[in-house]
Image 1 (cartoon, helix red, strand yellow):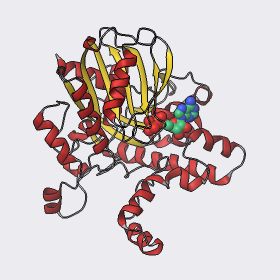
Image 2 (tube, protein in one colour):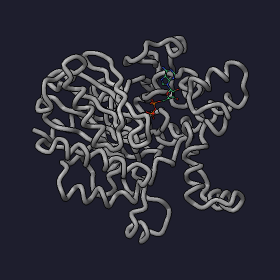
Image 3 (tube, protein in one colour):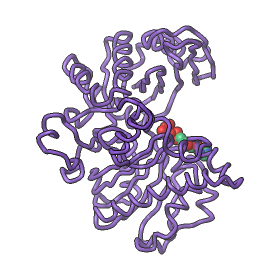
Image 4 (cartoon, protein in one colour):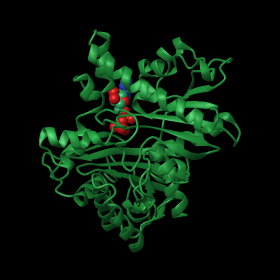
Length: 395
Ligand code: ADP
């Protein structure tokens, strides 16, 4: 059975086609610059191709994706009919979606209601869903949410210290994000640990970054909140900040609230601190050349992670495994070292040489035999989780 996984952004549509019998990726690619000119589809299947074509809408984009997937030279299938179901990544599921769901008139209406909670991302998700449904109307479309895995958070972790009636009326609470990745890492960790009862801290460190505390496979806390702005310092996001700063910035810079929020999302984080880049490859290179602000950015990023590891170890009364994943977690030893050094209170011991020179794209055990806590690098695979969820519903 073949399943197409779609991740739609406002001007892009990423896709990956899976053969689910083997869970092998047959083809992947991205339709980019949709609706903004100079658009193209970059495809990797039997062959790698770039198709430059005007893509005014997501519907046009998915049509071109289907034509390249079925192209005799670059494609991997003979007909779009070979695709049995489509899985859509959806960033926010609100309180309604605590697990994946089929696209129906009812769930689509619910998605529309959730747009207010994530106005930056949800309209694009909906465009992607509608476009795919229109072009492939006869097969199941499944919604897989980035918030579902966090829906098991207890009230003590998910509620803010605001008026409870406001939470009830306006649904202002912590939802988390990256749940698809946190779920994948938890499942892989469970296999490694070999038992159902364990305490795990997942460090998903990418451009967007979040930690989660997972007890016996269920999320009990995570660092992102009402939106992905809360928690860790990220590529361009500030992470936790005193809300009074919003008012002060608005007053001093003459900005309205949305300008301040846009600034906190796009111009802050390690990019703002370093003045160099949001990309950790640039930051580590600049730090190695003696750039003090790049070093400060690396230190601050890692310090915030370390602090939350401590918080989650406290929340779970211990931790069996710390798992690193995503672009930085998998590829930036300088950050892992800063986080893992001086974790003697937890009994963490790890192989420093291996940390600096570990194989890429593989599961790696960094902790030594005498470490009280397992430390692993586990490459994430969010698309596979979406494909598996889609298969479950399509069946
Ligand atoms: P997102 O999916 O949130 O955009 P990623 O998980 O791709 O983010 O992570 C992006 C970050 O990971 C960047 O800061 C980048 O520098 C870092 N990164 C990705 N690949 C590598 C690599 N091979 N070596 C070093 N850093 C990497």
